Length: 298
Length: 231
Ligand SMILES: Nc1ncnc2c1ncn2[C@@H]1O[C@H](COP(=O)(O)OP(=O)(O)OP(=O)(O)O)[C@@H](O)[C@H]1O
Ligand SMILES: [Mg+2]
Image 1: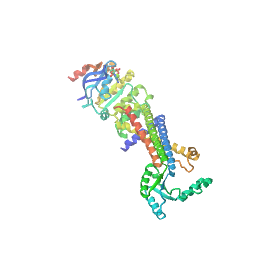
Image 2: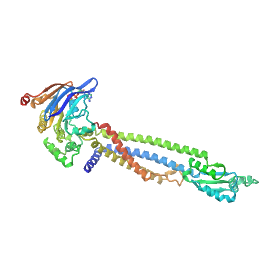
Image 3: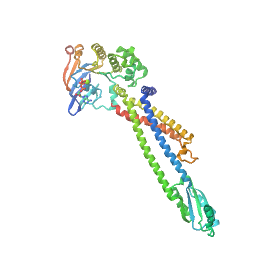
Image 4: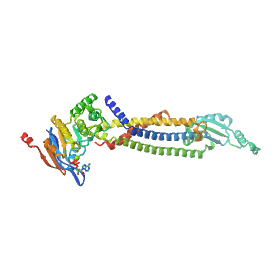
C-alpha cells in the first residue's frame, strides 16, 4: 500500500517533470482562474461591508400623541429597552425638540418667536442593534413597540431601507450569477488544459491499458498530478492576491474606492484562504477525472 | 486443452462492411498459429477481439476458458495480463528508457520493485538487449526496438502472445531473430498467434496457418510433418 502510494507519487512527479510546459500551463490556468474568482468575491464582500456601515444611522423614531407623564417616563424607557434588538432609547421632550429645531434654523430662529414650546410632539429615539438594522428586524421591533406605548407616527427611513434592500439583493444576485459563471468558465478551461496534457500522453494511457493496468492504477497518478497542480495553483493565486492587496493598502489606493478613511478593506479569512487552495485541489482532481474519461477506454 | 475458442464470430464496424464473418476456430494451449490473408482480410480485427480492444458483433469468444464476449470493463485488465501483444509499430514510450518500457508492464500489474528489476533484466537478456537498459527507444534500431516490445510482452509470462505484423518494417535477418524469440516463448508453453502476409515465414517455420479472406476463414492448414506426427 505504502509502496503503491510511493510509486504513484513518483510517477505523478516524473510526468510533471517530463512535460514542464503543459504542467505550468495547467498550474497557471488554475492560478489565474482562482485569483479571478477570489478577487470577485472580495469585491462583493467589501461592497457589502461598506454598505452595512450606511445602516449604522438607522434608528426608529416613535412620535407620541401626548407627552408621557414625568413619573411614567423611566418605566416606559425601561420597557422599551427590554424589547429584543433595541440598543438604546432616548426620550426627546417637546421642549428639547423645539431647541433642536431652533438650533437647526440658526439665524432664522427668530421665526419661532411666539410659537408655543409644546407644539412639536414628544418622541422616543430608539437605536437598534446591528443585526436588526434591516426591514424585517425593524418590523419585529415596531410591532412590539406599539404594545408598550401608544404611538402616533413612526419614522425609520422606510423608502431608504427598501431601496437599500433592493441594492443588497441585487448585489448578491449579480455576485452569485457572475461567480457561478466564472466557476463554470474555470472548470471548462481547467478541464481543457488538462485534456491537452493528457492528449500529449495518450500513448502512455493506451499502453497502460494494453498491458493490463486497472482503471484505478491509470487514474491515481493523474489525479495526484491534478491535485498537486491545483494545490500549487491555489497557493500561487493566494500569493498573487496577498501581494496585490498589500500594494493597494500601502499605496493608499483604497482612496480610489471612495471609502471612508477609517474603512478597512477586507481580505480573505484564514478559512477562506484554505478553501481557495482546497478548491484548487478539487478543481485539479475533477479536471483530470473528467478528461481521463475521454482517453481511457478499456 | 483449448486456449482460444471462437464460435460463429462476426464483427461489423459499419452497416455495409463486415470485417470478420462467421468465424469458428479452436486453438490449443501451446500452439503456434499463423493468421494470414490479404490486406483488409480481418487479421487485425481477429486479434483485437481476443484482447477485447473490439467486441464481436455476434458469436462467442472464449479465452483460457473464460467467455470474453460480454466481459465487464473492470475485468478486462485481468484478462490482458494473460496476453502479451506485439505490434508492427512497436508502441514503445519514446520518453522512457528501455528498462522503464519493459518495467511498465509489470508495474501496471502492481508488482513489487525488487521483483520488477529482476524480471526486466531477465526479459531483456532473453532478447539480447540487457546492455541497452538506459537507452531511449529512438536511439536503437528498428529490430532492437521490436525486441524491446517483445520483452515487454513476454516479461509477464503471458499464456498467449499476439503479434500483428511484427516484422512488417524489418529486414529478413532481423525477422529471423524475432521469429526465434517467438519460437522460444512457444517452446516454454506460450500460445502464439502471428498475423502476417509474409508467406516466406510459413516456409521457414512451418506451423498451422489460418487464412482469412474478406473476413471469412477460407483455410486451416497444418504442415504435413505435423499432421503425420499427430496421427
Ligand atoms: N476501426 C475500424 N473502423 C471501421 N472499419 C474498420 C476498422 N478497423 C478495420 N476496419 C475494416 O475492417 C476490415 C478488416 O480490417 P483489418 O484491419 O482487420 O484487416 P487486416 O487483415 O488486419 O489488414 P492489414 O493486412 O492491412 O493489416 C477492413 O475492411 C477495414 O477497412
Ligand atoms: Mg492489420
